[in-house]
Length: 112
Length: 114
Image (cartoon, rainbow over all chains, first blue to last red):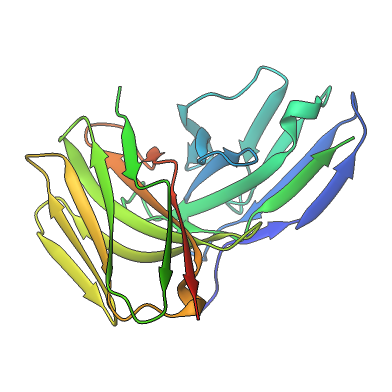
């Protein structure tokens, strides 16, 4: 069965650069969630989208923005990268804001 | 604000032992509770999901229980194997309009040695 696809799986950037992570939800899933997991930390909720509209917002820095497109894929844009942004970024999806989330494998961002 | 705590933070056991991982949460108004496995630097693999109306779920050697009123869940692993070594995360989904806003515990790092 198709799962949640995240790209790229690994990304290395310099400080102050910009990075974009992509998430392709399971087919028919219309809700996408982004989480950030720092080294040795538990995942923290960043932001979610339902039917291409922002649904909920967590601890997402102002330097980050995200959107959901007409095909329901989502992109997380991170600007002015800082060393502390180095983390594993997870995307999850569900149908109709359902309570059962399916997680992707994550995108590992390293900021040097 | 929901807080999730997992005990112990780390556990090292010999192969074959039965073990229990604990998870507690402060707000009992939850939709569900989920246990995940995470290998070092890897993604989250969902192990068991317990809806708020359920008491337990079983999958193979894993059994998870939920006592919503006391804010506790346990993950029981029977006959542990070295391949079970990983970090186990507990996460709760709050009620209300917190769609998909899971709150995770810090995890229990499990090492099963041969």
